[in-house]
Image (cartoon, rainbow, N blue to C red):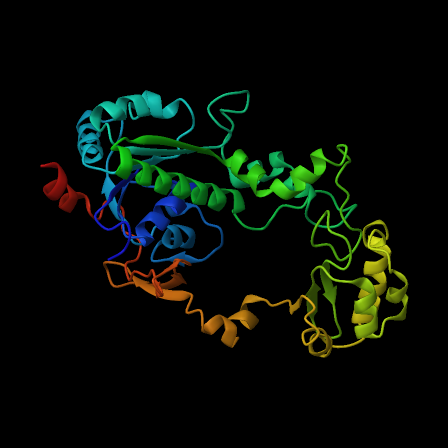
Length: 380
C-alpha cells in the first residue's frame, strides 16, 4: 500500500509546475483527477519542447501527466462547474496554478471552496505571489529564471546571462507544493483542519539560491563575478569546474590545489599554498589546470585522482550514461501504457519507501477519458 492510497486529488492545473506536483502525489499513491477544458484540454498537450510527438500529443504532457485520470469540464459552464464542485466536496486535496484573480472569477478560490469542503488541503502555484507589481506577470520558467538573478550564476564571465536548460523553476515549485501539501495532511491528521498552501515560482527559485544569496548579503553586496574559464559555480574557488581532456571532459569539485599539483604532476599548482589564493587567483589556476588536463585522457586522470579520494568525475552525455552499470542498477526508466495500448518509456518516481521503488504502469490519459466513469462513481 502506497502512503497516499485512498486520498483524492482534484487537479485544476496545466503546463508544468502544478502538474509536476500532482504527478508526485500520484506516485505516492493518491488518485489524481485532472480537470481539463473541453476540446483543447491542458495546453501542455500541444506545448512541444521538441519535435517528438507521443501518440498524437507532446512528450512533455505524456511525461508529466502519467498515472492520472482526465475529467472534461468547462469551469465557466454552470452544469460542469457544479460537477467539479461535487468532486471537490469529496476530495482531500485541490491544486491549481491560475494567475491571481482568475480563480476568484471562476468561483474556485479558497474561501469559496472552504464552504464546500472545510477540510480541504488547497494548494496553488503563482508566478510571483498574489501581491505587488509583478503579480499579473506570466509565470513561465525562463521569465522567472531571468528575474531571479540565477542566469548570472551560470556560464563564464563576459558571455552574458546564461539560463539553465531545463524547466527548473517549474519543477522546484511543484516540489515545494508537494512538501506543503504533505505537511498540511500531517496537520489535518492531528487537528482535523484543512489548510491553504501557496507557492510562487519566484520564491522557489530564490530559495534555490540560498547559499549564494546569503553570501551576497554578507559580502557587502559585491557584484557576482563568474569565472573567466572552466566555470561551474560563480562563488567557489579553484579547482571547481569542467575541464576538457584529450578525449572528453571531466569535472573537479573542491580540493587542495597543491595536492592536485602533486598528484597530476602539474608544477605551477604547487605554488598556491594559501587557501585565499584559490579564490583570488581562481582564473589563473583554472587556466593552468585546464592546459595540463588537456594533455591526457579522462581515464588517465581519474585513475590518479579517484584512488586519492579527490572529488572528480567523467562528464557524460545521455548515450554514455545510459550504457553505464551505475545507471542501469538504479532501474530509473519505467514503461507505461495508455488505455489504447500505446507504450512509452519515462522516468519513475525517485523516492524509495521501505526498500521499494514507487512505480506505476499507467500512462497519461486521453482528454476526457475518465469523464463518464467519474460521473457515475463520484458525482451522480
